[in-house]
Image 1 (spheres, rainbow, N blue to C red):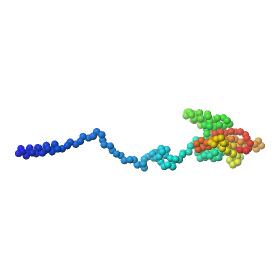
Image 2 (image 1 turned 120 degrees about the vertical axis):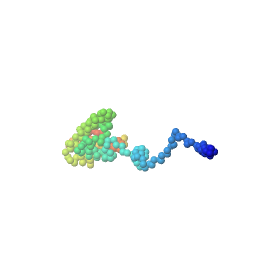
Image 3 (image 1 turned 90 degrees about the vertical axis):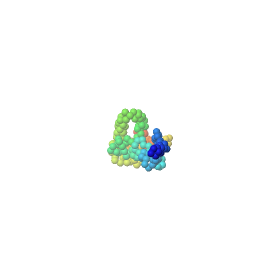
Length: 217
């Protein structure tokens, strides 16, 4: 009986000796490969043209440079003059005229108003003061429209009372002579001089001169 039991013990020992122990777990987990992102699933910001992505046509399109806020209505000197005359007849005249001037450069009869308003703009705490001064100036300057009694006077200014020429010394300046609609025919019609300057894609009023002149605008 001892021999069979001894033989079984030897077989069990041999089997245990032949087995290898499982490897110890590695301290560094294996790297996991993620699939590359699909461009169609990217958020909208990833195709924002301002980031240099998106269709070529959108990337090459230059956004309009707006300074005053009149946009296409002031895209040429001729359009700006016509739009100014239209806005002078608005029921909300101050608000309507505000976008048509370059308030940092405006000079009236030689007085540099724009410099003072530019200084106020440089101080964020005085923006309200600047806006109030500008609105007060618009309201005061445009009162001449209320004195026009002839309903066709401004229409005549638009059709025959304007002479516009580009400044030969500055391609970004247009000089406009306007025959004033309020006049005594016996005394002759005064002529005002408006200067429009190009800022970005707009033509804005940068100077006004109220000087009598011959009725040949």
